[in-house]
Amino acid sequence: MVKAITIPANLKTEYPFTPKSLTLKSGYKLSYLDEGSGPVVIMAHGNPTWSFYYRNVVKKLQSKFRVIVPDHIGCGLSDKPQDYDYTLKNHIDNLDELISSLNINDYNIIVHDWGGAIGMGLATRHPQNVQKAIILNTAAFTSKLIPKTINICKNPLFGEWLVRKFNAFAWPATFMATNIGLSKEAKEGYLLPYNNYENRIATARFVKDIPMTSTHPSWNTLKDIENKLETLECPKLILWGEKDFCFNMKFYNRWTQIFPNANRKVFKNAGHYILEDARDEVNEDILKFLSE
Image (tube, rainbow, N blue to C red; front, top):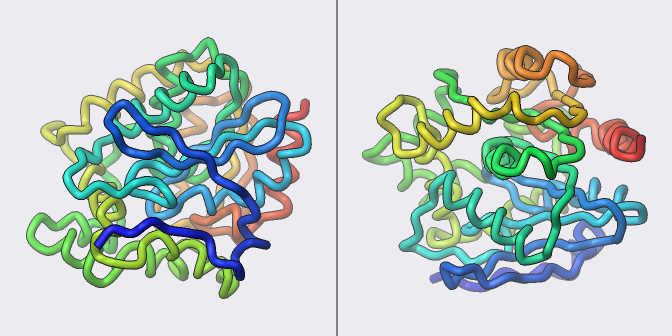
C-alpha cells in the first residue's frame, strides 16, 4: 500500500527542511525543497536517491542562494503512482513545470546520476536561462556501458520483481555507491521513501528506462539532449568520484570531450555518492564556483 512518507525525528538534524509541494497537471503531487534566497540553484537527483542526497549542499548554499530540489515523481516525498509512465521525458516535463510555476527564469543547475539526463533535459530546452552547471558523476548522453549489477535489474522477466520485492537497488546502493561508508542516519535517510513494494516502483522503473538501444522509448529523448549539450555556453564545473562503479572514468572523459573548457576535479577516494565521500571539499568547491 502506498503511504505518505514523513521525516522521523531522528533524521531532523540530517534533513532539517520543510518540503513544499506542487500538484502537477497530471494530478500528482511533486515534493520539493525551496530554501534560502538569492540566485537560484536547481538540483536534480538520480536513482535511487531523492532530495536527501543534496541535504548538505542545501545547508551550505542556503545563506546565499535560493535552492530548489525536487523529488521526482515516485521518489522521496513525492507521490508514487502505480500506473504512471516513468519516462525521462515525463521527469523533464515535471521539472520544467515546477520551475515555470515558481516563475524562475535564470538559474544554476547541479546534476547527479540519472538527474544528469533530467537536469540537462531542462537545461537544453532553455540554454539561455542556465547561468552555471555543475556535473557530479552522471551522464546525459547515450552509452553502451552498464554494470552487470544494474543490468540484472533491467531484466524484463525478474528485474522489477527483484527491485521492488527485495529493495535490490536502493539497499545495495547504501554500500556500493560509497567508498567510505554511510552513517546509520544517512542509510536510514536514503532508504526511508522506499520502504515497501509499492513505494519502490520508481527505483525499478528508472532502471527500466535506461535506454541501451535505439529502439528504447527514451533513446530519442536522451539522444536529443546529447545533441544539444553544445548549446550550453555557461561556465561548467565537473566534480567526479573516481571509484564510481557505475559512472566510471569513461563517463568523466566523455564529459571532458563535450565540455573541454569546463573546470574539473577528480576525487580519487570518492565513489558514486561523491557528496557523501568528499562532502566538505565538494561543497566548498560548489560554493566557490557559484559565488565567483
